[in-house]
Image (cartoon, rainbow, N blue to C red; front, side):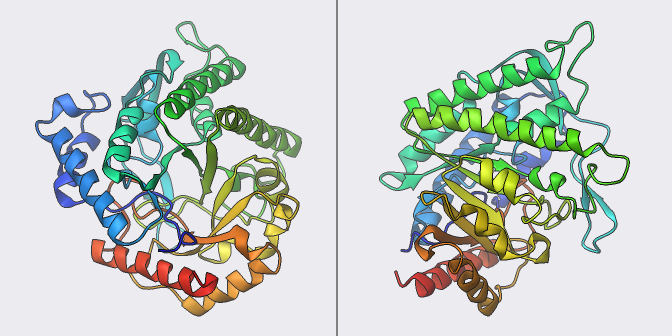
Length: 386
């Protein structure tokens, strides 16, 4: 075993579990966690999680997840689990870039979030799921992956949930306060059941990179002062919850990527363009960064971590989007480049994202997934000599 190779979190779901997930996707009359709507679903999910945890241990992973098997989408299930939120099927899904790099690729449509009451993170279903993970993993180290507060603030504030006669929150400041409060309630309960590592996943940083051709914040007509203000607001929201988690003794990690759905991505944007914002100012203990292709830009963006000796950086140099093994020479070359900037002991290796951020998963088989994980282990063991 080497702790220098890590998985981001999600793994491909087995077919028997996907049968339930597919039904959930097309039902507009049900609410999370959906167990009462499908006979056998809860039992199937529980057994699938037991099996994937066993598999992770067999493949010598040092930090265990539940494969995110309970999730339909990487972020929405967590929000559906808040008090005061309803799920619904929207007119359209999210739009990703298709494999040709230009065509649009639409996701599933059950992405609607409707605020119906004061947001609450108490008695969240994810706590029950995490306790089950702890029981299954035994003495193994575990982590729980949830969306970052700022990512959810972005999605909710860009929807029609604010203002109006019947709105729970009349403006963004009220929404922000309510959301931060709900996150703190959840984080407190996570710590209370013995959680140690909480990972905030985030796909919005690169919207603020001016070399991202898919960003709504680029162009001559955009007020860049307002854009920078929004970025700072996102950072402050996250840091408020990170500080709270730290006060409870938690390690708070983050994973950032540029979208991952059916092996497609949502856009570009280099780390160099956002390094002085999100990399430098966010107070995470460990950063999982997507670096599997040229969109990430120069590894020199890591310079901003030089004066943060306690911060660890996980380089996502491997790809979970392909069904072939990765170019080991490229991985070693970039690790060497990174170790000239950041002490080698502070670096780790991973894939750029999970294998199934959404339940349908990327375009590879389970056998190919585990082969790629084994390759990551082998490279890390070779590079760090442990």
